[in-house]
Amino acid sequence: MPDSALFSKMIYRTLGSTGEKVSAIGVGGWHLGLKYVDYKLSIRIVRTALDRGINFLDNCWDYNEGVSEIRMGKALQNGYRKKAFLMTKIDGRTKKEAARQLNASLRRLQVDAIDLVQHHEILRYEDPHRIFDEEGANAALLEARTAGKIRYIGFTGHKDPHIHMYMLKVASDHGFKFDTVQMPLNVMDAHYRSFANMVVPELVKKKIGILGMKSMANGIILKSHTVTAIECLHYALNLPTSVVITGIDSM
Image (tube, rainbow, N blue to C red; front, side, top):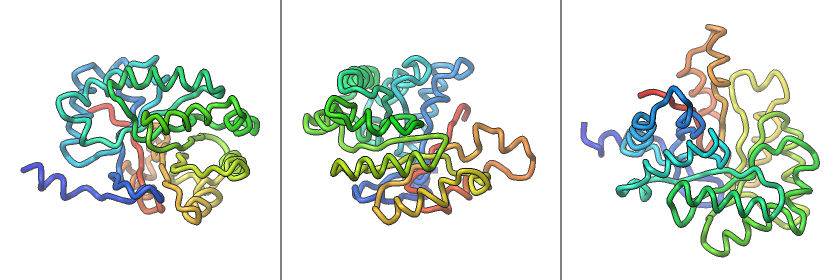
């Protein structure tokens, strides 16, 4: 099948108010650096995804002690960078640490600029205040954006939608609007601390790009034998998500 035919099968959505067109499915970066995923396989997964129309790539500076970013950086060589919308995340809360982590990610990914960088794991009510402090991490990302090192800024969180809502409020209090927000979105979400019910409507209203993750809860949901992997993806894709990020560890 020619690349054009494969490419036409991918669904593309607009990333919030950025105007960027991103694939509805994204490649999760964490799995690429796992010990049972060898180097050659990780490169093949990324390049095959890009060849077949998936353009959204997820990563984080601390995934597998940097191995995930290093492998993705290698996969983006030989012309593949231009096919990708590249995202990574940082954990640093101070301006100095955020800048250090960002520069490490740029080196590992072997790129001059990253399309989207997100503040990772906003889990506590103090996190937004640390990030938006005068010497906080967002100051580093704003400087990096001005310098052309990054294009867009977002944040992620795994545990509590109330923290997401608070992060959005603190950002607004500082006159800042995020481009993206990433959160778990899966068939079990509605039953406990629901991101879909609480956070997603606010992001739609504000036209912020919605990034879904944990659609299968790292396979745990599948162990119930009540839902298939495809059904899990379909559920998350039928929410107003821009991208559903899924871990891929085999062809």
